[in-house]
Length: 82
Image (cartoon, rainbow, N blue to C red; front, top):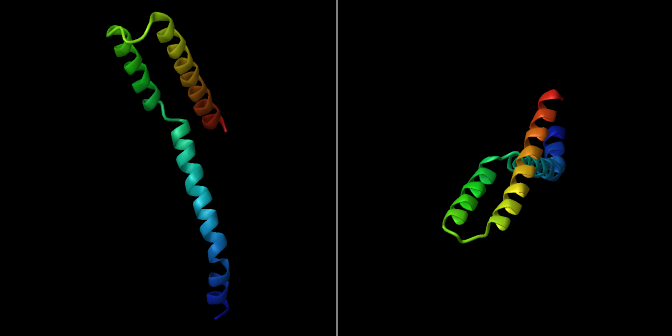
C-alpha cells in the first residue's frame, strides 16, 4: 500500500523528469546533426549556380555554415573525451 501511495505521489515528478530528459536528448541530437547543415550548403551551391544569389552572399552564408560545422565537430570531440 505504501509503495502504491509513493508511486501516485511521485508520478508528477517522474513525468517532469521524463519530459526534461526527452527534451534534452532531442535538443542534443539536433545540436549535433550535421545533415541539415550539409543540406543547406548544397542548397546554397545550387542557388549560386542558378544565379539566385551573389558570390558575396554565398561566401557569407557558406562561412556561417562552415563555422557551425566546426562547432559541431568540436562538441562531438569534447563529448568523446568526457
